[in-house]
Image 1: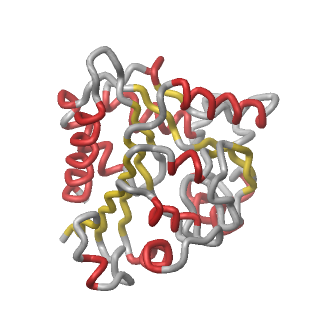
Image 2: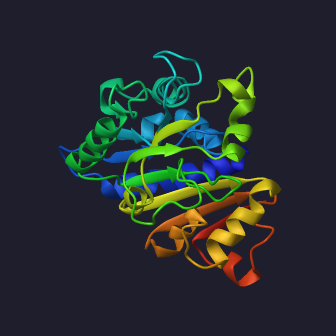
Length: 247
């Protein structure tokens, strides 16, 4: 996994350097989950190469109390902010404990726009083809909003909780339209369990039933593959420079 993380770090750092203008902070979109962990570890080792950043997280569970160890605010703090020595005041996560989640979603979307949009968005892909918490059926132009989680997503995330009953049923997530608005996308996928979803996303039709199929519509996408994640992709697709298989 070190090779995957280092290759992803190369891609992210190169794009952040190109996005950086004197007097401004480039904006990094950060994803939680297991796929990007090797990237964050690589960036932590190379944090002297990072410019001062602003960062926006993709999503957050609804209903977890502040400080809950599995809230994405805490995960971002543990796995990204502290290891990368980011300024916590410039790192935003959707407010999963907001009294009015819909209003919080609209405010988060507005905050991203006010920051000038995301320069580099880090992504993983769910086994059902979701991006962030955009489950199958999400509108391709959707924006930050409240969503109900698919049971398969809750089951996949249950390993982080004491039981399935503790996994929230709803979340706040950036929409597919929000993700598409980022200037560059860098997606990491590892393991054969992701192969079917990735093949459907990259080789099938662009459809709401496979949210990650919006990757086909973006002009600057880098996809890094390891441990069989590209098993369902055609040799022609694998030969493209935007896909980086890691031995």
